[in-house]
Image (cartoon, helix red, strand yellow):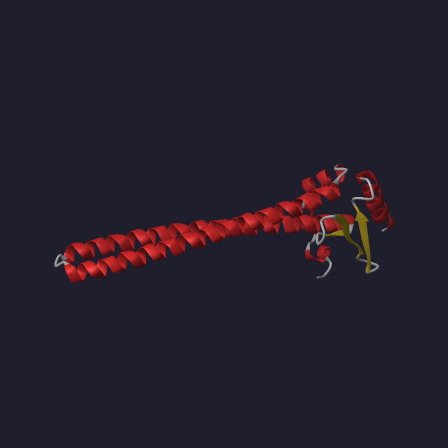
Length: 182
């Protein structure tokens, strides 16, 4: 993955002014980034759950339709009231179509919301990385780790702090020390 700061021009970064000011005023800026990532993960999980529930609902609808079609076919063979059966079949088909459209629309909106939230979180993370030159590594949440990147020097320095051996204050000071070396 290339340097995240290359993906944004000055106007894009300026549009994040309020977020940047809040980040710089916040003593726990790294925690904000970490929490944003956790919120992103929770949002992805919730969207996946919604998607699975909608898929299950669609499958249930299909099973009900198949059962109704089977009953309709049996009714056709046993009853001579074909017009009534055809009317009921058309009514059933219309109802099924409306349910499927509603499920699909709901699923589509859920996916749009998820994409919009993912994009915002990605832009925010990119902005933090551009300002602090820190790219966090969220692969192991029991540690605070990441990479310091200097665009001009093309230097990447990995850092890692064990949260069980250092206080939050010590970790914060260490991260700021690394940032200030840049």
